[in-house]
Image: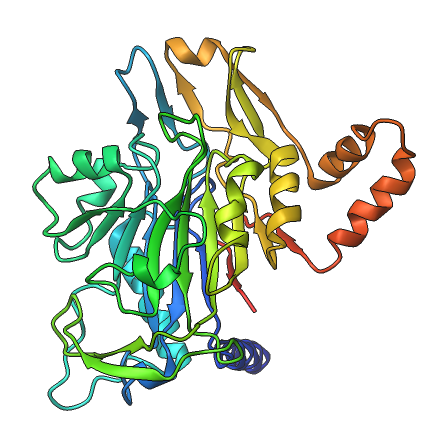
Length: 379
């Protein structure tokens, strides 16, 4: 490597290190579809010198191979684009490199590297493009899996993971801390949002909530001792009964009706939506059933949530076949198209005026169409 290349490499590394020093969550898109790694910075008082900085939640991993539901004759799909990450080992290496750049994972005397850096797996649906057996069996058996009821039953039937927990439903006027189920640390919870009348929970969402931002109001921490899932004796910190605001990431690969988001607005203590993962494409089975709710629903939901980041997900046009493929219809939307359509839908008022009003409401929203292999620090 010549001198200019070395200089560029050092400058890029320095930029990354400075960005990681902000200690904000990091979102990695592991493929072109809907597999994600969310790295949540641990609270400062829960990080010992040289220990790990991030808590890593792996979401809906499916990297290689095909997926089929019911039977291959009914539905079978493959990624159209090769996944940027092709194995759980590569996920571990990604997390390891981020830790090192952020100044964590310093292995001193008597401290060995953990067997895995994945701390939890979150599964949104039992369908095999979200709950992919071959990929999940690569995950260390001691990593807890948080999954919807049908997905939890499916994962449990493999007899691989020691801990499989059904994600509880986050209700109106709920306290996010009551959803922090062991073995999660007390500053983190994983639950789900559901919609009325959605008996199959197809249009539901994972809700990942955490209280690590130093500028949100926090309760006085009460120290308690617990073992991490890796048995490393990490100190945990639980809150007193006073209010503790938190941030959340809402992940809904098929979309959730905007009317089902009232629990976020009514949460007590308050929740601030940092990222909202909802696709743009509208996918349906003929005119009978809408599968992916698409950009127009995402726009309505975003107007309620006011998430700092709206991130597109589950929009890969995969290769596939089977009986159901003959009936699938896909409309590819852009955010601009959705804004124009929303303005046009307002009866009796000037569409041009409303389009600008919608644009104003989105001035502070960082819409992200994160590509395969891209990462973002959620500031």
